[in-house]
Image 1: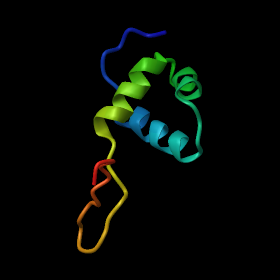
Image 2 (image 1 turned 180 degrees about the vertical axis):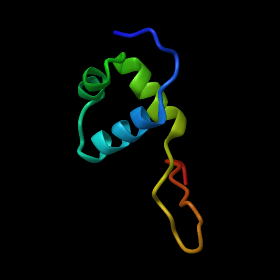
Image 3 (image 1 turned 30 degrees about the vertical axis):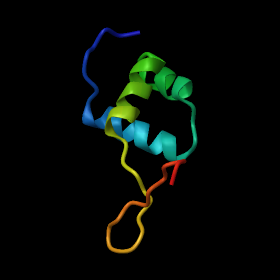
Image 4 (image 1 turned 90 degrees about the vertical axis):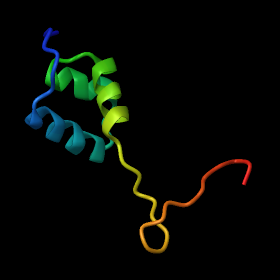
Length: 65
């Protein structure tokens, strides 16, 4: 595995397309020659919710609601 600290834009696009194909972090990491933890941290750090209700409002998904 490489010791690069940053992911390139092409790496991020590859992660996005692989996630859309429902590949695992381990599979994605092998294809990019990175650590699976780096991939999961990158996804967690930059994920966005796709749940929208009404005019841009995100629903309250609290279990105590």
